[in-house]
Picture 1 (cartoon, helix red, strand yellow):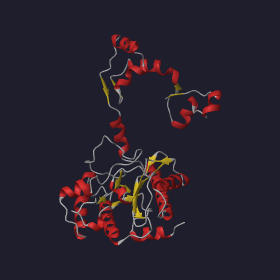
Picture 2 (cartoon, helix red, strand yellow; picture 1 turned 180 degrees about the vertical axis):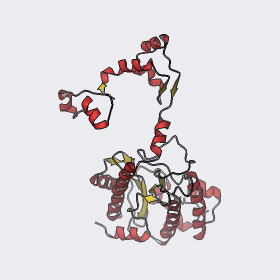
Picture 3 (tube, one colour; picture 1 turned 180 degrees about the horizontal axis):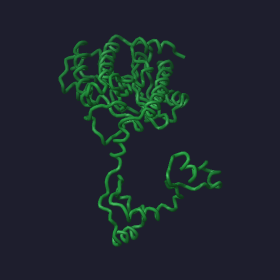
Picture 4 (cartoon, helix red, strand yellow; picture 1 turned 120 degrees about the vertical axis):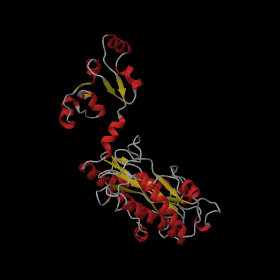
Amino acid sequence: MFVLPKNPSAELWDGPRTGIDGVKELFGADEAYENTRFQSYFKKVLKNVKHIFMDDPSSMPTLIKSSETKALIETGLKLQTILPLSKIIQELRMVKSDDEVEIMKKSGMISSKAFIEAMKWTSPGKTESQLWAKFDYENRLHGASILAYVPVVAGGPNALSMHYVRNDMELKDGDLVLVDCGGEYNGYASDITRTWPVNGKFTEPQKELYQAVLNVNKACIKLCTERNNISLHGIHAQSVKLLKHELQAIGFEVSAWDLERILYPHHVGHYLGLDVHDLHDLDRSRKLKKNMVITIEPGIYVPFDNKFPEKYQGIGIRIEDNVVIGKDEPYVLTSTSPKEIVDIEFCCSNNN
């Protein structure tokens, strides 16, 4: 590793540096040098390698002077290929170690606690931005370093936009609020979505639609095992079938187009870890293995369109959990965040 050297004068202004000895002690580096030595070290290494793994080959000229690159090539540089690095790293990140799972359990517990406090705090007249601030505060208070992403705090029909992040409207009596938020703990992200009534009580249409989504959420979580020999794409296909059945039971007549393009236009989940949408170069068709971590997040978003039952129009609901794949049983990292109707209403009734 190449690092800034210790410098008492600079550290007085900018804080302590790890330094060469600290890098070996704290980060396990076999060798450590001052960063000023990087160019000479890099030129020496280049003379004896066939491949360089890097994601941005255009940065090569900035690592060493172009004249030096040319000289190396003329004097027998044996470099054959520049190969991508990130996909190799992502493969290593896909299956979590037991220690990583423990960190993600803590991350999930912190964010779940924030959801409990936010539900208790919500009331008509408060704003989406205030609820955002409440989440930021509660996550940091309980140990998160930052929010893992800009949250969605969507009151009423704002929830019909998947990535609504304006978060600046007033929360109104009789509406639901959909919140997609998670904290980051020791570098590992949580990604939770819950939907609850602003006034603490679901109306009957809200309750019916919410229970439909919840039933799909719970059924999909049960699929999250190695024994089921299924992929995220496979779980998504099941979620579409399940949601169609649930909607038909409460009076919807929907085509496949309406369901997958309008009412439920997103995927049921994604990989989770050091990033929120983790492992972006790895597709969701691979079979799930023990200690992979994914999200399960079915949703329903009913626009103001008379092809759908009027009493459900303008309602958006998503329920998202973080799940560790097990051999025979999944482990839900976000199980302490209320999602049953009775639990949400009880939590909201304890308004503080």
